[in-house]
Image (cartoon, rainbow, N blue to C red):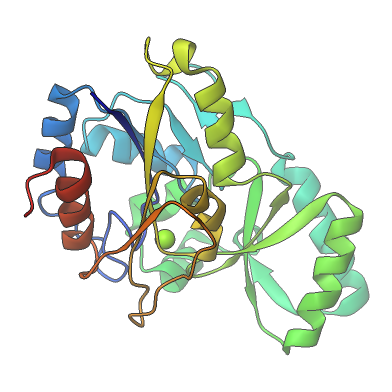
Length: 260
Ligand SMILES: [Mg+2]
């Protein structure tokens, strides 16, 4: 029997992009739990945000936060893969001193401003501010400056990753590279099974590598109904509905085989 492992993005994939609706997800996750299917939340969100979602969704599996920058298993101290946030912000501030205020980031914003830019509740916004290894920024200027910033970041071993709402400044890690670390240490974190079939679900550029490494890649429509086009010889499935329904349909179809 195939042992499925699910790695999923949250915003726009498991949660509705606009409303954060997740109707039906908890019930389906309970079914997956009964079949011992690990579900890894793999997100650009912080561990503080993911801890809340892990509780809300009754998930016991490790979580990967900040675009692969950090792993947390149970309540143990986070394993940092990325560069500490204070180093990243110090570099960004130095760059702005020379090039002007071409962007704003979470480090510049009050909780009220984070709420304004994300639509998150106050509690969620406070959790989103608890960053360890990545800085989301909002680009305010013309595109050429972004290329300059990207080049300067590369010289520091940092990168710019495009997410749903923001660009994320962070070290050279991804949802995929950190998922591979978890899979390599499968016996420690995921149970006895080692030969997993990966079903990955995502909607954004920061999900690309994770989707391309999966046996089954479920691509969710983005906010404008477009799909990421993947370079993969494996199964690619374009969800016909947005989150959460598209997530439910895909997991039912591939893992629980209740469709058709
Ligand atoms: Mg997303």
